[in-house]
Structure formats: C-alpha cells, structure tokens
Length: 74
Ligand SMILES: [Zn+2]
Image 1 (cartoon, rainbow, N blue to C red):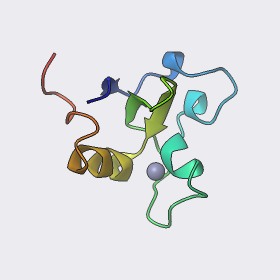
Image 2 (spheres, rainbow, N blue to C red; image 1 turned 180 degrees about the vertical axis):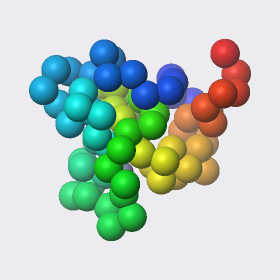
Image 3 (cartoon, rainbow, N blue to C red; image 1 turned 120 degrees about the vertical axis):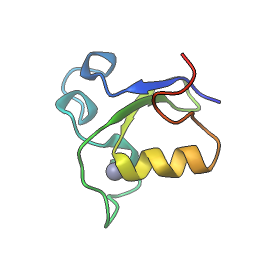
Image 4 (spheres, rainbow, N blue to C red; image 1 turned 45 degrees about the horizontal axis):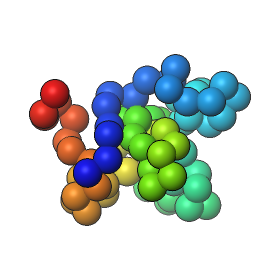
C-alpha cells in the first residue's frame, strides 16, 4: 500500500503536469481516452516519486490495492 492523499500540488515538482493540477498517471501512459486530466489524488509510485491521478486513476489504483480510497485511514 503506497502513501496517498487528496491532491496537493505542492508535493509535485514545479513545472510538472502534476504541479499544474493535471493527471500524471495517464500522462505517463500516453494519455488515457477516458482521462479527465484533472488531478484529484496524489500518491507515491514504486520509485517513491509523487504522482497525481484523476478520478479514473484513483479508482484503478484502489481496485488494484495499490492505494487506499481517499477519506479512509488517517
Ligand atoms: Zn487520468
């Protein structure tokens, strides 16, 4: 289970898509057709780098057991 929280632009490198409020999860995958592009969650990836995800990414990651649904735990 990786750390995750409500999207916070300050966690992300300045100038990156995530810092601008965009979904880096799908950007890394070449852009998802259903991606809204709007980040709602921040989470750490396998390399310990903070990534951002849209609602679709959040559902995907929770479904795979990689992160906890927002609002739980803590
Ligand atoms: Zn997305």
